[in-house]
Image (cartoon, rainbow, N blue to C red; front, side, top):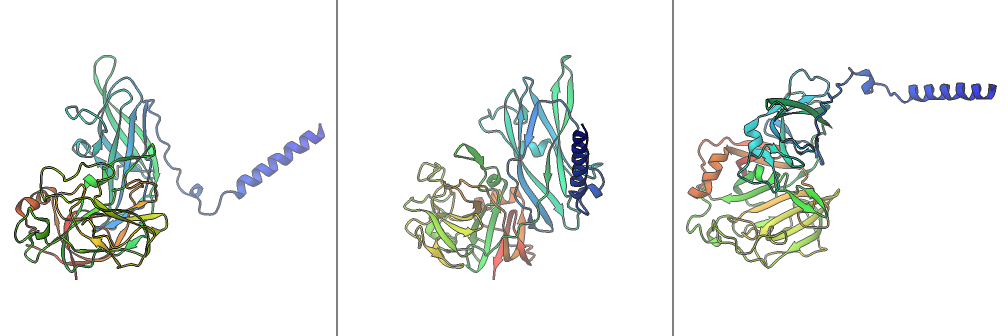
Length: 400
């Protein structure tokens, strides 16, 4: 009996000692107790499957990611609003995404376009593309959580609002990946880092992924702002066409595609059927280290200067800008993704551009009209030198 008591005392002593010594100085135990998410009882699942680092952009840092939402119940729920809170200071939301935002950013693979995109019936799911913006000087929380507001009918036929708190995230740091521009042609370049890229979902080896999460389309414009000075229906007449595309870093060529014919600019139909194999047109993929691939798409057929296995240096010409694959006009599609066994098979990764001169931002509506008028407005330019930032939305930069 005394040996049993002695064992219990020793176990208690060791356990207490272990527990005490496992609490480091300045740990979260020294901080205010964090909020515990409320249990709602709602059979809704919401989680983030992949989280990348913050990007630094104009006067802000942004966290771009997807929230996967699944209704596991027989009653339809309508997603009305999403709020994001600091897990430790949760009195007021740090961001609110209303019904209009949800209409534009809630992806519903396979749903009937005539239905309300926000309605989740039994076992239906959706992917909410989120852009969480922290303005310059704003405190960035250590952890955040999401509060979803659903609308449904109760047993009495009354419409009720049901909140649910889900998906605690540790906010990452700003990415340290800094790259050169994928071209060195001096002059003005239109960029399109739009929402359509972020929501482009692929299935690779049974897993959904978003390789174009931070993709940018680049189009060169002439001195007067025109895409072409003559025939807009001819690739060769575009100012972008045939510009040398260069490697953004040292690396190894791990993927190429060549021989895909080009499209007529702004045509209703593509020159080839768009599939997983043809969507990038003629492309080059370079392993730039640290589990990252640099992807260059829509190049001119037979213009590739590299082959699989080649070692390339930063600034080396790898091909010429064209209009192949899923492309409406001559431009370069560039993004960085994680390693995978398939083209467009990785997760889109954030990066920063080492240096550029920013000239102007365009609204979505302005950007839509640019190609209709064959001209980028060059009025009211505001040249500002940027370092280690990534452009978002639509705008114009200059390469000096």
